[in-house]
Image (cartoon, rainbow, N blue to C red; front, side, top):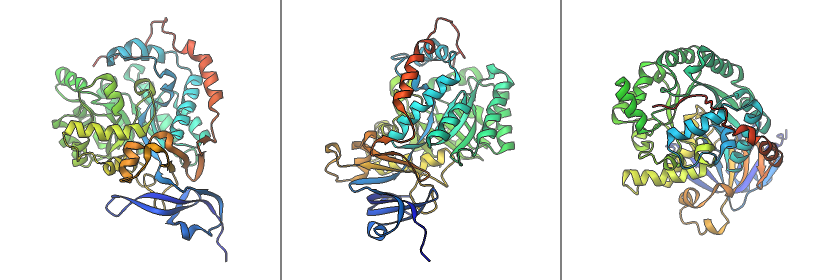
Length: 450
């Protein structure tokens, strides 16, 4: 009996795979066979030459990689890109961002989410972890455009119990939707904006409903020092005493994680991970970065992120990968750390684990979801190739991503977006900007005071 055609065959490329010890390995002149959104096999181009397929992509001169995961962002904030420049953190929040966010409508969020998804798909991001408002709207955009997402409705204690309840209702309502491409989390903003009682209640909700938690904590050293001065504990110690370290927890930034926090993070009873977004730390002039080496030593995955485009100016995870490697070398004073292969590991498997998807994405292997990107290395800036890992991390750019595939569906082919109309989004968003950025009302959604 003749086998049914494969849904997709990607052939003639070099495939980035992980060996039994999770080391990065490159298989040349290889092919990927996809059925029903899942990788059926990683084989040779010769073996796939006569395989019947509904769709075939000839990818000679390209590298097939697991899709990148943006482990912490605020996708709709692309609408604020470049609005609050050259400001310290407190002024950035209080004088610009939180007053502008008081204007946000569901339509603004929808347009921002569409533009962000287009940017990420073009940059090889196949999954993003979002922490923002009006998240039902973002979920609708994700379902529409075909990307994968881990979504949480943000809340502050200033909203009263309704904020926490709304976050939980969203997480329960939308998890597993969009054909399983949407996972969800509870999303308290941070220990400095959410009271201990609310954090404790969030941990209880997480345990009751089997939900992970995504929040900001120990974002910078100032926050840690202020927390110690005011409360006698670090932000991570607040997470411990409120029970959040017993949940599956994704911590955004963590540049303020200190030595006394490490034993707590090492013995958590849940899956704890940290997302690092180095470009923003440089932009704000923070003196520290995420302690990747210390976290890796205690078994805490560190995923790569961009934060929102209002603080990072882009959603380019490719840049986050290169900066993470370079900043870690500088911080540690050791050119042997973080190597290009280590950086690729953080960009793939560790990022997938950070958002709770380590069992289904993050590597190209039989049984994994077919989240695949094809990277063109024929440009002059990527030639010659002496060390393929180094070329990918330090020479290639997000614009070298030619094709982006999620769950076996091609979302971008040869740089052409297939599921989003960017000119229409930009036109409508441009028309709405004057009312969106108006700060004359003198309101703000929160006070930044750490």
